[in-house]
Amino acid sequence: MKRLLVANRGEIAVRIIRAARDLGIETVAVCSDADTEAKHVRLADAVMPIGPAPATKSYLVGDAIVDAARGAGADAVHPGYGFLSERAEFAAAVADAGLTFVGPEASVIEQMGDKVRARKVAMEAGVPTVPGTTDGTADVDAAVTAAADIGYPVMLKAAAGGGGRGIRVVDNEAELASEFPAASAEAAKAFGDGQMYLERFVRSSRHVEVQVLGDGKDAVHLFERECSLQRRRQKVIEEAPSPGISEETRQAMTQAAVSLCEHVGYRNAGTCEFLVDDETGEFFFIEMNTRIQVEHPITELITGIDLVAEQLRIAAGEPLGLWQSDITKRGHAIEFRICAEDPERDFMPGPGSVGRVELPGGPWVRTDTWLTPQSKVSPFYDSLVAKLIVWGDDRPTALRRAGRALSEFIVEGVPTTTALLREITTEPWFEEGQFNTGTLEAWLAERSQAAGMEATG
Image (spheres, one colour):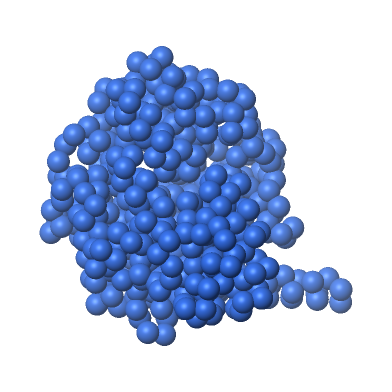
């Protein structure tokens, strides 16, 4: 691998470019008309314009990106996360063009990217799954019949995608009949497939994921990440390791993830996601992300392993250079997703021109961002502007460092969620690690209600 095209933008494009340079690999950035002055463009060795600002006319046009890679003389393509990263047809197009796709083969993406198929594969591998349907359906009557067998409450999920799109929780048949058409339509719009599958809804659970690396034959895990603090199915704060599972559960879950990867011959980095029942301690496989995750830095900080560099080595044909016994965890890491949104206005996005930027520093503080003074937050893309990651010898140390670093993070010109994140770190339930997937939204609702009562006197 000599020249890598990065088929993405923002902080992940910056992250990949830096990892490639550390390995002596030249980089090519792609950019829409809105990103011609972006940080990832300035860092790369070359740049290829790919179209107008809307992602549907630039970053989501696979043919344009493959043409750009050919035109720039690249021999590999890294998709990052989001956009085309889990599109099997894009991975196939890259391979058909004689280029290396930094990720698993198209057939594996197709197999594991579809939630229904992934559940079937997990069952074959002996990995516990949430009780639910084994096939997707776009028919509401079939869904009603299936829900009666599963038992309410049930969760509707898009068979062909993730990111919270199309998800609904229903408590009875009337709600299911009402919500199913809207969920299916949302899934069809987002993923081009309106099929849904149903699974038992665990009322009180943690969302815990396991980072894996595989070379097509062998696989290893790099421990787990706690991802329960979510708003509208979107992660807000992540930790590694999870503060809410036992060592017994950790060992069983990480081994299940490795078994699943070896069962499918997984190659490159991936993440197996699980639900952990708060009441019983049971864990269930829910899906696999066949790409690098937004929250990968916390795993890097507790293991000392550069996951993007490992991706590039594996894609270049090197065998897995790590034995499980080589991978140890040390300390605790926390990541805060900082978005250009106004929490006091229902998280309304705040695109605009950035003024002063001051990023926190000091020992064991890392900021992954594309932000620079005078840069612009575009209305065309995700509102994530930075990831603040801290590490400590233990969780209390990491929490104190997080509070300090968040207080140092300054961005003028656009609203951000920084102050809200700092507020969360002072909440007793967060300090004690006593939370689940519903905690953050419940707290936000209480906070909003209290603010409304205060405003009305």
